[in-house]
Structure formats: structure tokens, C-alpha cells
Image 1 (cartoon, one colour):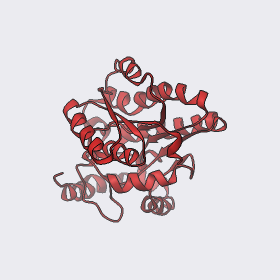
Image 2 (cartoon, helix red, strand yellow; image 1 turned 135 degrees about the vertical axis):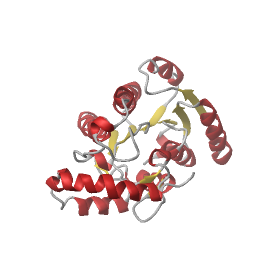
Image 3 (tube, rainbow, N blue to C red; image 1 turned 90 degrees about the vertical axis):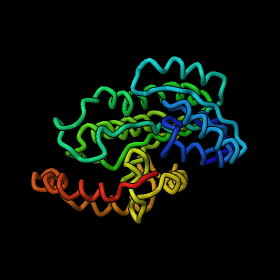
Image 4 (tube, rainbow, N blue to C red; image 1 turned 120 degrees about the vertical axis):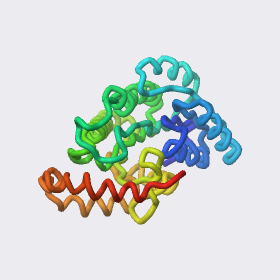
Length: 268
């Protein structure tokens, strides 16, 4: 990753979790950062922390990515900036606990807008700048749950599968133009989305994952982002898909895994 060529980095969902960690890490590596998220007070607080800690300039843009009306304002806010890095991080999970499709909350349109439309729209806005310069880096946050059809997280899994397919196809189109487009498919992370699961061997903090993931930006069109998750994926690939899709395993997940997750929840 040749940061000296990159003037500005843009991070969506930058108010907390992975987005906050990417904002800090890009700034530490010498980039000015544009932080985009929904909650203005949170953005202002984190932006101040990034500026004071790193000495880099930070611009904030308030946007609710569940709405399709935000992109004109975002594009105006990015005019005149020399953007070399885009991190499409914003996303939402319909329910932190596994559940069957009909039992989940009715937020499907919000989830599609936030997880899918945001990636397409933001990529188009930034890629138009990167193509003439023939350099740039776009990181799209997918999920390990998007690498196979994952029951009990059906809509989330499908939305993340879209990100992986979109990213890999787009990389094929623009790789020859010097632009790196990569899908990241992490498994367990301790973030607000996962109710701050207790970190461990597999469950990484946002800061740990971000630091490691940025060292692997040239390692492939789709990566798991850290060594622990790469190793977990190697193990999981030997389990047939019918096992994950069996009703017996689904019942066990609803019962046992739900209890396990609740025990690992902790306050931020």
C-alpha cells in the first residue's frame, strides 16, 4: 500500500467500530480522512480524536445510508478532494442473534440500502475520480457469512454475498487501470454490530483487524482480512454445505449458539 500517492481516504460508517478504526489507521498512515456516518455528534467526537492523535485533517459528512437521497450531498461534499482510498464499511445486521427469516424485524429495505446500495453508489462516485489517475484502493467490507448461503442470517448473508461478487467483477474491469478493489470477508469481530463480543483467538477487535487487513491489500480480490480468519476459513471449507443447511444444525444454532453469543456480549 503506497500511501504517499494517496491524498485523502473516505470511510463510510465511520462513527464507531471498523469505520472508526479504519479512519484512525488511514490517518496514522499519512492520509487526510473524510468520515461519513449517520450520527453527527459521534462523527464530531471521533473526528476530533483522529485529528488530535494523528495531526491529519478530517472532514465529516453526515449521511443516513438507509436513505437513497443522501448521495447528491455526499458527492458535493467530496468535490475538489484527491481521493485515493475508499473504505465501504457501512452496514447493518438485521438481528445480532440468529433467527428464521419470518421471525426477524421488518427492515429489509433499510438493510438493502445500507449494505448493498451504499457500496454501489459510493464506488461509482469515487471510481470516477480514480480512473483518470489510474490509481486507487477500494476496500468493500463483506463478511464470512456471505461466503456461503447462511441460514438464520439469510438477508444479511445474501447482502454480503452481493458485495463479494460486485467487488471481484469490478476488479476484473479496473485492475488493468491500476486500481485495487478488494472484498474483505471477516468472521468474528468485536464491534457495536456484534454487541461487542469478547475478543479472543478468533474474535478480533476492530483495531486488530484493520491493522492486519491493510497489510494484505495486494493479496487477492477477496480475503478474510487476518490470519486467524484465513485459518478458520480453511477449516470450514471441509464441512459440506448440507451440514450447515440441515434442520438439526439450525435448531442447535438457535438454541446453543444464541446462548453462547449472549454470554459473550459485553458493554463497550
